Length: 381
Ligand code: GLA
Image (cartoon, rainbow, N blue to C red):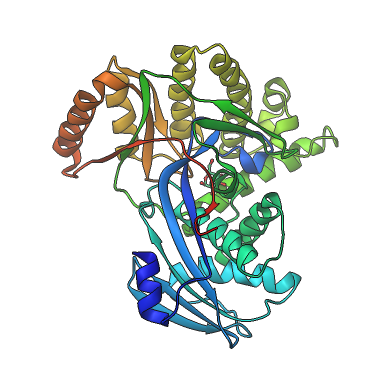
């Protein structure tokens, strides 16, 4: 479909076709920009890109979702009123900063990663385009460099001070494996996530979040404020990863209450992820799932990035005996909950969640049973 659209718009076949997935995160929320660990994986919801060089210096960008073609000169990469264009332009700008591209390109992209649902459709776009440009112009940048480039695109052009998790997960994912990324050192390991009788089910609240609305950046600033207060007492502290809970509590009165609460959630979550990884290694999903519920409480009460719809979905899931763990996932303020559910009970689980959600909010709940899949891949080679 993407290739056909490309052919019909530009009258030639694309040079490169790339697919880039959305992501889930099992545990470790809001830890990437605090130097902690995260446990993400790529999923079988993807965005596909068909791209080809142009003879001139223009970018012809077509979005399947918005059915819209934008034409931008390479020499004038400035923020567009159409937000989808900015995810692309931010990436192009990063390449231009390093070494200008030798020509413009044609692009058609689209896929089935739901927008604004907390599955990182934006990172999938950024990682996918970075990978596609690297292939198209044969620039030979390693994947990790492309991950960082995509993150800079989001930080500098889109203006969300996000961490590295989403681009990393989209680019580096492997089928059947979750990744434990140490966001301080950027070292990572793959862990098989191969529980036969359990699947990952996402419940989409349909509350559209917009990280760019500022709350995300505010959380990040509050964590930084906590760090700068603690640095007065221990200059070796550079992120909340360096802060024991007892040390934070000792200086509780020296910081605004909200700053303390944000920092306390982060410090506890860092410890929780470490323990949760041990649960996974022992195949103890009951203990792991318990920690997911704890994470949700922290995100809801102390980090305050949940919403009534997400809280309802987690509370309802918790009552279901077939559910090991449930929590809101991603940046928050809407999007999906992630649920670990016994395979045999998934139809009843979905039915129950849909009925209860509709009754309470008059919203049709969308659910996705996801499979852990490969990261960004070239399809035509
Ligand atoms: C968003 C950001 C990520 C991460 C999560 C919360 O998805 O893009 O960098 O901070 O929120 O864990």
